[in-house]
Image 1 (spheres, helix red, strand yellow):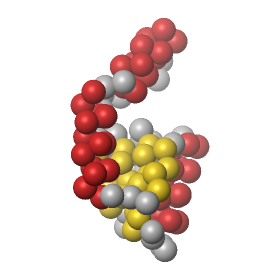
Image 2 (image 1 turned 90 degrees about the vertical axis):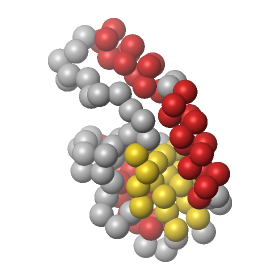
Image 3 (image 1 turned 180 degrees about the vertical axis):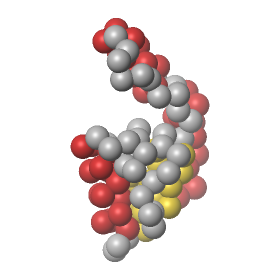
Length: 100
């Protein structure tokens, strides 16, 4: 089966719970399936083919809540990300897409 995993970021670049989960999921699925990870991270887990999508520079952890909300809104709805993801999905032709 061909599986695309889409996550804004993954471990080891970021070590939050969701980032670790997405990286481990892609690696585990890759043991039995063709997996392509689409992420804004520059590096994915070892042994997993990774496509880096356009992303904004990281926001400082101490940024205010309104600034964090604005950053997430801009990051999530960037046309360049949607276009590149669509291009990569057409190229890879997955049977399943897991968004995280």
